[in-house]
Length: 422
Image 1 (cartoon, rainbow, N blue to C red):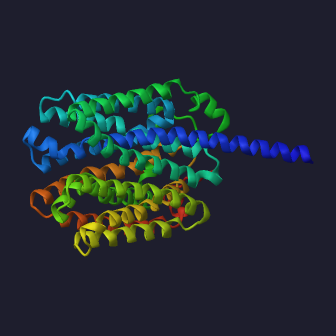
Image 2 (spheres, helix red, strand yellow):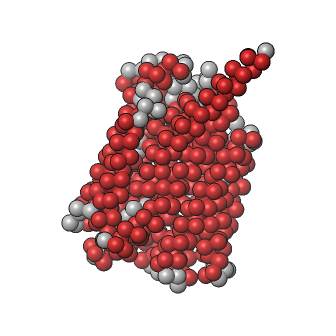
Image 3 (cartoon, one colour):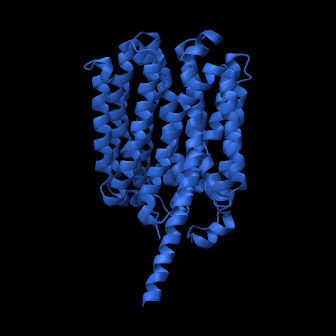
């Protein structure tokens, strides 16, 4: 009896250790991808006179990055399901890192635009690969926390990027900054290439039973019908509008705060960092909540609603400049609490053997919203309407709330597409 109990405890500890190791590795990769998202935006005030372009044109860099990522993310999901997450992940990070290094060699703005597209192609693999690994390998009772660690790591990558950019650029220039960032990415590729903790496809099949039939390339495209259910489309558009709001703050939040509240670059960047750190902390709290509740739709609605209210307050200048940093930190915190519940909602409607393509499709909504918002925000800045950036971001969050109503019962999904999870 005692030996049996000790054996169970030993197995449980091994499982916990394995889960933590996988969470850490996947989180590290996700942090790297998000780090690259914000390498160029903090440099916009420098790039603007250097290349003689407007804010709208600078916003096009972000639009093309996320546009390329969004268009190819669903394809990346199919590749993950077919060839394995580890291979696809390493290829994507390599392309992304080389593109960021290429930024530093750009002699014209057109070259930056082309490199933004190739960087977006590399970025497209992360969500389908990361979330496929977590969904298939992590114990169900710790899945909410795993999603939280994944999202938290991404926000840490975002938070570190502005600090890295400002620090390195102060010693050298923007070209050396991007090259250094890309080299860091290649070092991370080397670490993952040498790591055996992200299992090979054969090892994964032995541990994770897969009830989905082995597909040829034509049947993969036949599986695209799962995307056209009302529930899956609701997931897609929820991600679209949520991302539009968050990217609006990340891309032009610093410039808007400088204009609206007359903050200097250091304080405006600090406010953005506070938003990202607040979001990261909110994600951790949200992960604990997600594992304890069943109505993840309610958790997502509350977090998004509170964040939208705070953004409206900031845009209305109802607070003094001294409280802007705190207000943005709170907005980030409340928006962050929704991330684990958001991923749990997707997990509920994902059939076995399709996690790569489902997460790839749904997360392409993030890239759609991320690609559209910088152009709008850039136009608002060129029109000298910085307050409208915060209003527009709040509006995107309010629209996102309306899409969550479709996600309450995962049974709707299976009625729509006639796929059962075994």
